[in-house]
Structure formats: structure tokens, C-alpha cells
Length: 181
Image 1 (tube, rainbow, N blue to C red):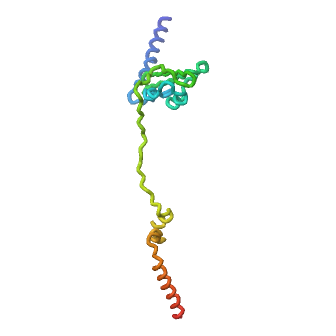
Image 2: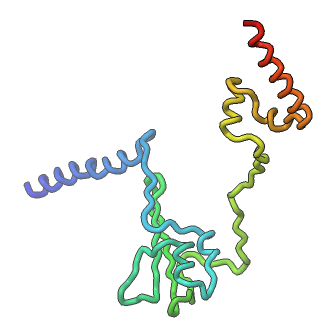
Image 3: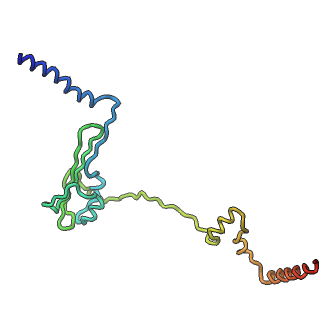
């Protein structure tokens, strides 16, 4: 009886164990990419140089994942990724300091001995010159045509002789109007 109950338990447990492999390998089921820790890549480690200050290293690598109170001269960076439900891959870098300066790098990445030339992603744009002859209000009012273009008034101001002759003509017109009444 004991053998038959044991055999029955073994036969029942086999399909249950196979369910996990079947469920993990179903076609069309999306599995997430899982990244944990400090994201580390070779280009970051290539920028590290001996005698860099802690502040410069923080700028390049970010804050360390493990800051041990007993080993203040050592910063540990851990990064693990599990793409699409595959096996987990873990990478590790340890940085060693002497005082405030970087003295050594140890782990899965090694800095290159060649100088790093980091290309800038910034683009320069040529901006056209501003029209400083007209104010913003003059430009806006010129678009709607409510007011005469003051720029034209500025550039074509009459000479003093023309201004005096037009003033005399205006006086003559004013003097003629009372006669009409």
C-alpha cells in the first residue's frame, strides 16, 4: 500500500513540474526585460582614468550600488539583466580610491588604453539677424494694416525745406476756410 501511494504521488507530481516549463515557453507570450542595479557599459568604463576625483567618477558612472562603511575606498557597481525571460547575466565593476583619487578598476569591464573621443550630440543652428529697425508692436500692427508703417515714416522723413513749405500750405488752407462760411 505504501508503494502504491508513493507511486501515485510521483505520477501526479511529474505533470505539475512540467507545467512550469510549458507555461514559460508558450508561443506569443510577452516576457519583460528586467534590468537591475547601475547600468554599466564599456563606453562608461572607457572614460575612467587614473587619478580622477570621486566627483568626476560620480559624473561618469553615477552613484555606486554598494557603498560599504568598512571599505570607504571601494565603490561597487552591480548590473544584472534578464532579457526576455532568458538566463540572468550579472556584471560587476569595483573602483578603488586612494583618498579622493581613482587608483584602480576591477571587474568584468576593463578601461581602454586609447584616448576616448566622445562625439557631441549637439547641433548648431544658424539664426538669421534680427530686424532691429522696427519694434514688435510696429511689426504686429503692420501685419493688420491698422496703422501706417512707421518704418516708412522713419526712412522717408521730409527735409526741412519740404516741411516748411507744407506747413505754409497748411496755414493757407486754414485761412481760406473762414472765408467760405
